[in-house]
Image 1: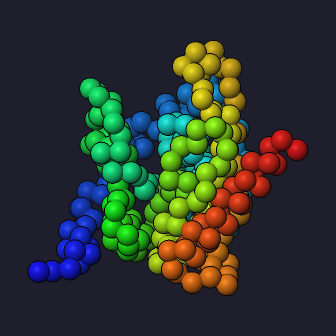
Image 2 (image 1 turned 90 degrees about the vertical axis):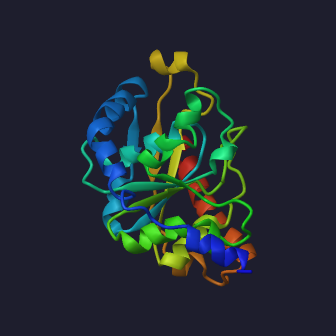
Length: 244
């Protein structure tokens, strides 16, 4: 009988349309979404010059405060972004316990159209869990992978401890990480959104390269978590600057 990890690796393949659907989606949908963020949330973006300091491919690592985050993070590229597919590390569909039409958007076909591919849960092997995402970064040089290092949304507004996947993904593909801090939409209500009661602030930090991220660390799961925590700590510093 084949080893389970080998079987999982062979099953995870990048489909032919993987690099096409996010680009098509952005062409038809992104501009009105960007306009809505600017109008209803009075969105501000700082540090966009840091994107000029990093070459493709790279990883965006952001804090996670609301279901709006995966959409809003694309705003760092502007209202008319170049054709750069943005992909996401998502949870498996069973995690999103939604009913009715929500089940289509959360973990369903909508996720893959948006460029979100699930990490395998329970494999206890980053190489297996992130196989699709590794393949994307290695096969598509002009692409961006978005990761929420906390692994879940915050429940109290504070940053959660880091999961190790983002650090492993960076060192495995020799890809820099661009830290992103988002503030202003935690526990936002629909009424607050429509009445323009909130302001979304997005801060783009300087890229962190794998060598610096793993300085003094190995690629064991424990050290990957330590390296990923360095990313979270950087995001925390970016958030603190908003209140100075």
